[in-house]
Length: 79
Image (cartoon, rainbow, N blue to C red):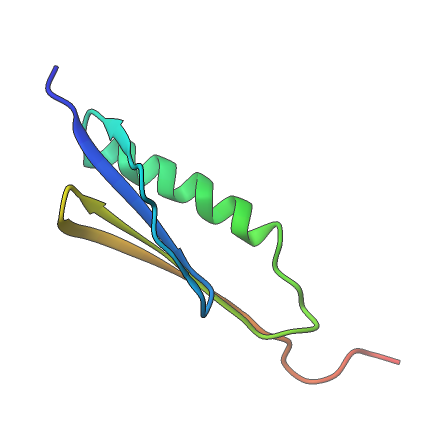
């Protein structure tokens, strides 16, 4: 099976480019890795600060999708 190299670039205002990438069989497998990465990000979100994250996935040099995650508190906490 021919494998492609996928790169998972993460940004939260400060970009982190994936220098090594990961060999995967297809875009669906890359999607699954991206979703697991987003789940890791979600577990680190802090309601006391506005947070915006994105995971951009490229196959070799071709962008294939991006997942954006945003969290912020609306209103104040109940007393």
